[in-house]
Length: 242
Image: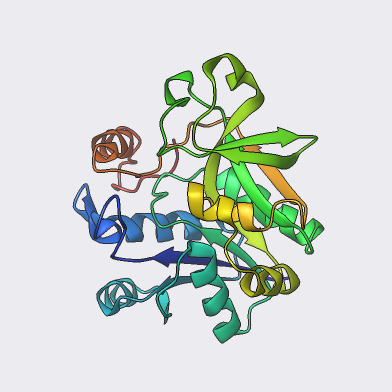
């Protein structure tokens, strides 16, 4: 069954306004992320979902497709509007601040949603103990390959039970419709973690990556990302993998 990738991007991030257009080694971050989706080679179509004409114009000028949406509380709500407009079935939601996303992880998420089209799928990696109390890093507890809890802070002596949550989701039509019809839960609003809206109502399969998560949550993350891209560029100047 075809799998599409939809990358939500907005200008009004509370922690980092204008984040999709911030330049990493001279190129806007949203373009880095869209290239990663393309390099994964597992998607039948790739779109940027945005409420910004500036972002839409940028990605289109570089040969990518964009779909305009309204203003949404979460990236999943934005992706779901875009998927409905485009008539998509299975969709991978890749956050626009993942310019170094693991290509094998994207392929694993794509395969998982094809195997379990009625579940949610998300991703995780090893949690750095230094991030136990870092609220910018969402944590997921995984039991038998499914998410059982999400938190922003975890006790350091319990960190072995938690993984770093990655900004990737996948879902089919039924799961998207269910999520869209539910109001944000108190837990979701308190922690700003969107899968808390669906946790306990539908299985959330977790695909694990042994590669470090290097998303851009705050401006301080940019130098680390730039260094990794420079270190891993090929002779033709294209960053392939970490």
